[in-house]
Amino acid sequence: MKSLDVDAVKAFVLVAELQGFTRAADALGVSQSAVSMKLRKLEQQLGRRLLERTPRHVRLSAEGLIFLAAARELVSSHDRAAEAFAIGVRRLAVGVSHQLVGGELPGLLRRLHERHPGLRLEMRVAGTRELMQAFEHNELDAALVLRPDDGRKRGQAAFAEEFSWFAAARWQPRADQPLPLATQGNLCRVRAAAVAALDRAGIAWNEVFVGKGAAVLGAAAAGGLAVALLAKRTAPSGTVDVGAELGLPPIPAQDVMLYGALGDPGSREALRTLVLAFRQ
Image (cartoon, rainbow, N blue to C red; front, side, top):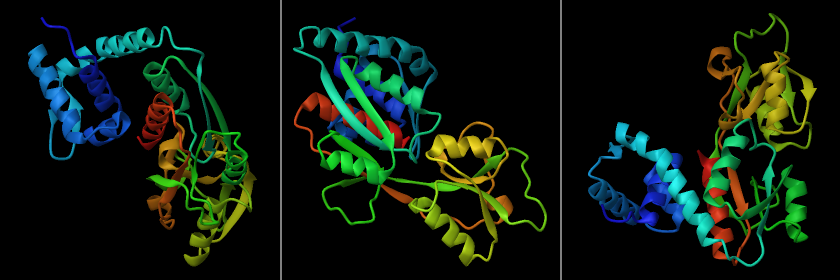
């Protein structure tokens, strides 16, 4: 067998992890057709069908599942070898809105480390206002935040985050009592959207828990204290979406903005990988 094309194997791993050709192409900075071509050539070389393609979905075949672990190991070994003589340590300081960080963070960081083993990542999790101030003072290389209210123009829309109402499994509201809410307090724009929607729908509510970040609000919801408006991706295990069951109003998706202009190609690729991981 001829030597495998490492770039093609990397494309396969990204398609598998990011669940699509478009996201993999974004992470690699190439066109979707280029990714598709690499994978077809890889399948031809291996004599195996690695992916099952449908108009709506891309999923691993049984043989693709078998190949994935070895492919990850190959890509990781290649990246470590390529950076063996790198001068210094590449540093990337990123701020991420605490509304975007939930229980999936360990898996996200693992994937980033596998893709960029020589990267020193410094991650600050805080509110949008605090992170934007840090970015403007050059304390951060990049910031991934909900769209600020002041209309900054320098960022680019990264993706739209979907929110819904979550509570503990089998949780039921008390009859004739206002809906108990867990929020981030008065300065939070997601809270503002939540209470405005409840007021328009004529649903009485009572703020019974205030915390900072999706992980904290998710804990309050999982503990049965209240209903929390969370990004669907960040809702913890033990919680369920109760929006439809309780007749709660839908909340429009919130734009997530990326701020940062990195000159180093390796850092740009690492940032793309990070953003795409949050989009899953």
